[in-house]
Image 1 (tube, rainbow, N blue to C red):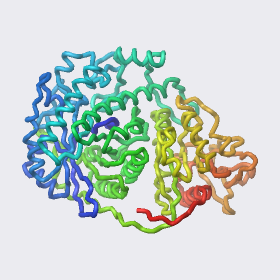
Image 2: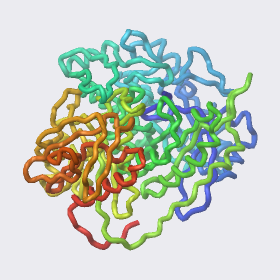
Image 3: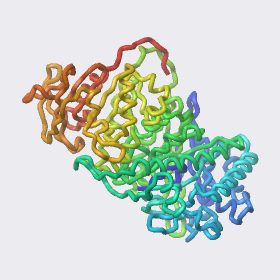
Length: 620
């Protein structure tokens, strides 16, 4: 899957958008490459005409410092001058990630990348290696020499273009592609970094060689392969990426500019993405965060309007003050289905812009198909198809809404690497469906939170009336302890089943926080059942999305069964305690004709365990 999860969205496609006037004009940017401008003399005029305010443009380190210590910026003047003179502002990506190099006509140059050739030639040991010992295009951004030279490139480039285009640059993006993972990126599937210095550093810190983790886990198969070094390995990678990113952010800010960072869709494990948890560690280093989605899950097209608003909410919970959403269509374009995606993009961006800290959006991937002798370029006919409605910012008076946190655990998605139990990632679907259902309730104020919020005792945690943990089956004990403390301090806890049944390395714990949730024992059922709840009889049928039918729960003394098994009345699939609620299934993922009834119960029973603290307040 073509997905960049670190700090630059290396997507070399461009798209279109037409914005209607609103009281809060969002930043609206489109990726433009040199060959786009070269092939269409009217392109920039049409971009401006169709409502865009910004152009996202890539600055290659290999162009600017083609010869060591000789910085040349004039290569970009004709393009950037044309953009600014057209009335458009700029987002600049400082590309030093080692992607394949394309010339001004969009032609790929063999054996060339966005890193200067002299770096590879003169300093080969400063480049990453995969686990087979082969050199990669990506640089080792922990290397002293690379840090020195790439920081110089960053500082000089930011200073030069800030002076040349004062007031016209929104920010400079840290353009790394430090992919410490197996995934399909610019150079294919491979693990990195396994060079000698990295191996020595890891061994020094942890007393063991760096592991190679390459396996798939599916929860429906039961206990999976335990990887004892999984958690420390992912922490090691994330921390290295965090340190490098913050280094370059400091260099950008040093010259009075804003530092930007791009993060691809997180809470997914289908294509073995690693280092997604770094998003929780960079809020202090990134002034404007861009969270993006290409409406593709690695296997099929996903026309989901809820992903970007959900992820934008998560970014806000993590502390990012200014957020943009990125909607990319390159996979749909290749399958000639872009016309079907455009309404989805319109709706998803409109939804995201309703959040107060979402300042704008970026789009990409709407291109003509390349022809012989000519690279793909922006299809201006598609520009007018994107129409974003203004957000409604009018305040209104309401009763105080119950504030619900939904926990999304990066640890969980590391453990369930390659999860496809339901033909999709069940953990991801349960998380996103829970957010969608609860966020649609006018009486609820929903926030997607991360492990960082709990571990750092973030103020947002203290403001929550309840926390829902939706099928986050692998959690560190530290997170479970924080959840227990939150409950003891008066908050409500809800799980839809299997909370922390595995630890951070995939080892079974045989515990769903049983003491807190009042669980005496659990027996798995692989067939459907009939249950009595609130005097109503409801049937639960097996389905692919549930992957395993349900867990029959026997409650401890003092806890109440809410959905009693007709055939075994001492057991059931919902148990309630003092500010706790546990489901033995995932009501948000039921797909049969009973789904509306179960989802109504899902919402109502969560509301029933929330401490009552209703007051009238003004909300926006």
